[in-house]
Image 1 (spheres, chains in turn purple, yellow):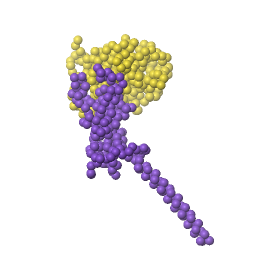
Image 2 (cartoon, rainbow over the protein chains, first blue to last red):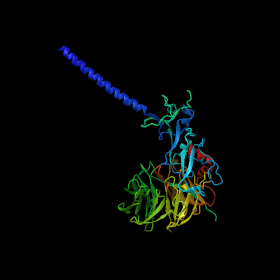
Image 3 (spheres, rainbow over the protein chains, first blue to last red):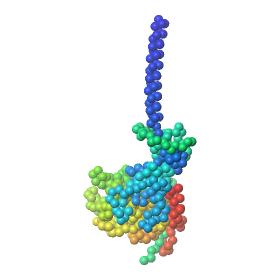
Image 4 (tube, rainbow over the protein chains, first blue to last red):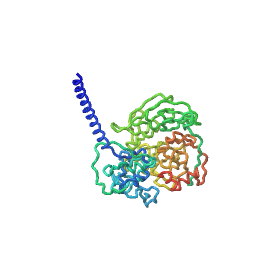
Length: 197
Length: 308
């Protein structure tokens, strides 16, 4: 009787162990997948474009880039993120200086072009990510009330080398670098310019 | 012709957090009715104040309304996304209609009444629509220029109409105050971009708001450097009010002017209405508030307040 009970107990225990192992394995797999798709990203509502993204990233050319949200962009002729509006105006009254020290913010006329009067044109602004170093000067200049707030900083996953502890996150005084789960990540670029830290 | 500079002083503040009737969530528009009663749109309510600031009455209004006006009979008109509603003097709904076109609702940012017409600023279509009270569109204002519309990077269009039906409207992307006949014929414009001369308009898109005084002066509201300015009809600057009176982050200063020429400026960021009374035409070339003028002239001060 006791031998029969022992066998039953053995089978019961074995089944339980196998069941738990299966559940734990599945949970582990899911957790691994979840963390595998988690990336560091900039929370635009916390970000103050303080310039630390440019200087704190382990990459010599930061993984943080400015991006323009075209839905919010006003397509201004006198974009305060493009022109240094405080710079001396040229003969047409347009500021001669630009905000971006890298000249990474580019613009082109969209729609009907008026060659005579630039005030009659709408301009589309795009960031040349090869030039952008993530300093955030354009983002800061675009914030309301000066602009519509269409420019924001983003960590480009394709460039991010996923440090165990993101150095920008450590440095960010606004706690604007957060970990978010993102499905469908793009392929990595070769991190050819990683500095040894 | 010599221009007499004007001098204003702040005479009252309505609706601030310490007032008996504060606007707790929003302050979206302001108008002046018969007897200089003040009509304000905030917290999804229409609130009426005596000229001195005492609260008279209020009523629940159309949700998400962005602007209001009042006619000589006390009828109140509200503009909301894709919609115009009007109420009798007691606050009962008297009518309304859809504004815009099928699939393209108007983004109503300003509304005025001229005789039997309701004029509606549509910042989505970027022109002013003329309606009768049944909602039949009678015409458009602002389409007869090179681009066929106003340039509105900040998606806001404001205007006012004088007793003869002449319309002054903001063209923010071009940094202009434009003048139009009721039939849509252009009558001229003044203004240009500039960061150093206080007569110019700053930033990407200004002036944002506009009202007319009974004697035909043009009152403008600006963002980025939050201030109110008064111009002669031909564009000569008469007065600068602010920026010390307004929240530096406000993107609108809604404006109205009463029969005595008092300027009512509603700051949605602080949810308060400041009233500025005309003290005198000083006839001298000095600013209303010397420190404000100094701030306007000194570019580096602007920079520190706007960008750092």
